[in-house]
Length: 128
Image (spheres, rainbow, N blue to C red):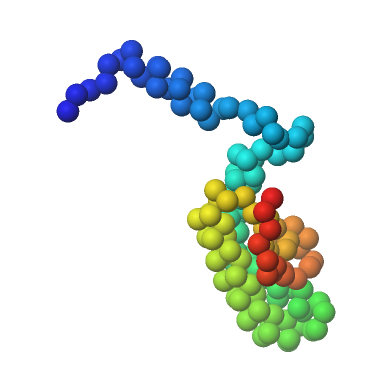
């Protein structure tokens, strides 16, 4: 196997840099580009996959405030476990499909946003 000549390495690096930094002329001013969209989706996926467990205390707290502490510690706990599974699965799916820029299917997008509102899930996939 032949090793690449040292002169070829900077040329290859410059070529890759040029390919990945080509501006998209069709994009409107101020609109996020493709890399921003897929980066945001990957970030959202990682945050939801790793932080999904926060749904348990969040749901217990919300349910306890609205329906009483005993209901919150029983039904709220079970609902929180289900929301944890849902947010974690959606996070893993977002990480696996981050190259397809879609809007988040969980509302709120991050578990720490709008902490006093119950998590809901969207049934349809929308492109960004």
